[in-house]
Amino acid sequence: MTTLPDTRTARASAAARSRLAAIARRVAQVLFVLWGAFTGAFLALYRMPSDPVTLMLAQRSGGSTVVDPEQAAQLRAEYGFDQPVWRQYLGLLGRALHGDLGRSVQTGEPVIGLIGQALPQTVEIAVFALIVAVPLGVALPVLSALTGNSLLRGLLDSIPAFGVAMPSFWVGILLLQLFSFHWAVFPSTGNQGFAALVLPSLTLAVPTAAVLAQIVGRGIRENLRRNYVELVRAKGAGRVRVVLRHLLRNASLPALTVTGLLVANLLGGAVVVETVFARAGLGQLTVTAVTNEDLPVILGLVVLSAAVYAAVSLLLEVVYPLVDPRAAGARRAAGRA
Image (cartoon, rainbow, N blue to C red; front, side):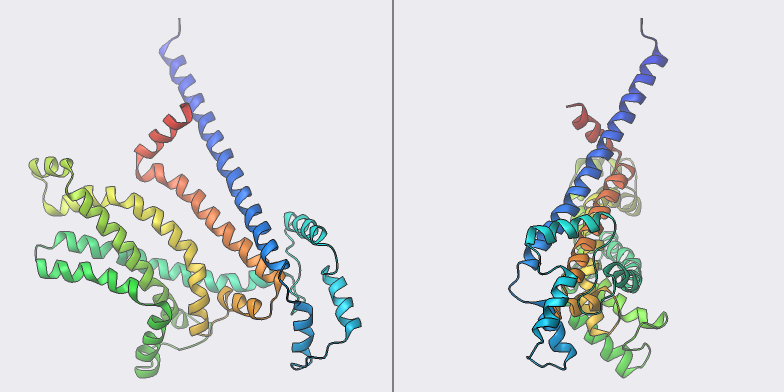
């Protein structure tokens, strides 16, 4: 006869095995995504008809179209461009598995080193942008739900649509005109100090907050019509308690998903922002690599972007059950099925 403690132990063991299996599946998916991104980028880049070695030699000679064939052949052999495509692929993939993404065709420096130098500059913009965007993106729809003034509610509801419609480069130019050229509060370019971080981060934060506010606002409005809200109100809960305790929590799950995607998109948005503000970072590195057809660097940036998406997705899988315990129950049910 099975006792109650034995049953609890068996359930705990089954739950632990289910969690380990879920983690193993997610890790396998992450590895597949990275391999797919690497292979897709390689096929797209290394099958291009252009020749990065010729472009490099032309730039080194001041734009001359005359290239020494012996020197070009030597460089192609040095970088492996003279080998069959499948051998180049296997060689790059093997080195990538050991953490070596090759060397830049233009500078000769390791790709990992170039990305490592540029990454902190972009990460600090993205982090500061999130610090501004998340509270702002949540505060706008919450204030709209709390206010009893229909005119003010309409104004608050229209702000996110306006923020989404504004292109990032236009926001950056507008901030430059106001806070750098007119009032001279913040520097217009450079990477030095916190002041130089403000305007680029705000440029990224405006569209991010606008998208987040739209998602949270839509979730609050949808939940406002649910029966449980009427039940909570019937129990005597005020507007503030209903919005902050119940509506905001239920609207946070889709907003969490969108926030994860926005975090990954911030790296792409940095390309425009760092160009507008002349900052050294991943954006500027990407522009330079694409302009010079620096294939190893572009390949490394694609793999980095895929890794960020995969890491954020994995993190969301961990955070979901903490925000909504129903997600953990649904996952366990799916695992048993």
